[in-house]
Image 1 (tube, helix red, strand yellow):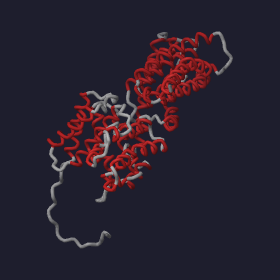
Image 2 (image 1 turned 90 degrees about the horizontal axis):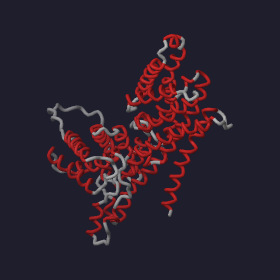
Image 3 (image 1 turned 30 degrees about the vertical axis):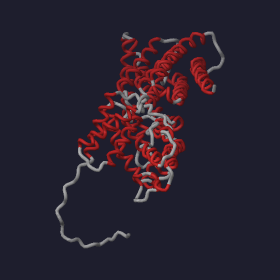
Image 4 (image 1 turned 60 degrees about the vertical axis):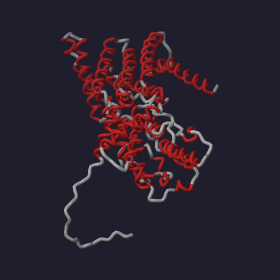
Length: 461
């Protein structure tokens, strides 16, 4: 019953979005709450465009199925952009409506598909504000969709500049294409200038607004992820002090995940940043994890059940830290998902050796399983890197065998079913991991023995 109530509530707010958003957009664009007969026509146009575009991304963009926050952020961004429309229209006319403000912001935060959907809704609102001008609708929708499609990935601030540049060029071309009268064009110098500058002004507004949207929504653009993922981040600095072994493991993992994600055209920035933070929960009890131990293992004096509970607790603590520090939702997912529902087999075998009445399900991580390609890559890299460090005899052939064995085992355990990774992806990931780990076994040439050096410093015991 609780599940059914939850499903009904989800459907309810989506339906409310479909029915109420066009009305709110009409009120914002008209700066009036006094209804007019023309609103019926406007409601049908805006409502139809909004329904079709949002229905498409809700069904095709995976993030909207994973996190409700994507729905609310998308809706809020559309409303925020339209709130600027009357100002642009009042100051410089119809050609100054900042459609690009919403389109660039949505595309940077949620991807190209979501940006295209927002362009449909926002261009329709702009056209309605301009007395149902088809010319204006065509100019805005063609220029905005062309611009974000040509850039696709927003990895640097200069990518936003490229979107503004392409949008400006295409907008001017569209204006000339729709007004072939040379006399009219010669008298439209001011309008042409406004059309050319509109995308750049919108881009400046996006750069100012985006950090606040990212912090509030916890949905980060790649630009925000890069700024967040510097090794000077307070959580990473604390990890390097409290659990240095885990810190270096995370840095090595980040290199593996970035290269693998890049090879299969996944989001390599998200894979890298997620790797940095995936084990931050180990700061709570660092001495219970092998990479931080210095001879003494506190697990030796504990029961298998207690061993298991301590080990899996790093996921819970990591998620808690991610919420407190407002890390991106997708990074929190990697903390929660990088072990999926796999079994802590070492302590399960220890329990069997002690003749305890246990089942494999008693020793599983709480999950869920990875729901994105990037989270799946982190899971595979985590297991492969740990296995590499435990190898006593290392050569490229053995590394390749252990990587393939781990990837096949994780796949056969059905841990990657929700990740979107194909068998071709897994093959390429395994090849990349094998190559990177093989490079780590390289050793330096030994230096020739040098003459005795006078000691001027001494390291204290």
